[in-house]
Length: 215
Image (cartoon, rainbow, N blue to C red; front, side, top):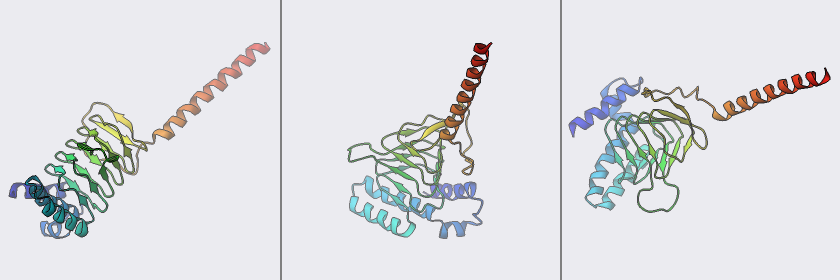
């Protein structure tokens, strides 16, 4: 238990340059509090003490602004940065070394039974406001851009942005767990640029054809 608590603290210092000392982190970081409340609630949930587990999770939601269902499985060194508005569903599975920013939803898409929430593998980053919905898998070292809506599986070493989410980077190289939120690729803009280039080339070909016909 103490080893897990130490890892929870260490990841805050690794990921947040604003963290100054352990007491500040222990007393003021709502993302850390939500993780700790969840670990306790999950113990009761696994023992089928569902009411106690839900009471703990709802108290955690009231205190932190982060809602994690007690049935969700969360690995080690998971960092919820700021965290307000984060929602994590019952059958969600989160691996190790995952970073989640504020406003993220790891939810379902309807009233289906069984596994209905995402599986987030290790070393994934999910930026602010992203929605990952349904029983899909986000593979290791993937990055989900801010505000994206992801409805399909995401391969490893990929970056996904947009609504719906589109893969914009997939080079097979292990990516660092850092994402420049102010400089996200825009797949729609890139498509328009490609169309503009093709139209320009067609105009040039048509112009050359007209010149040849006039001769």
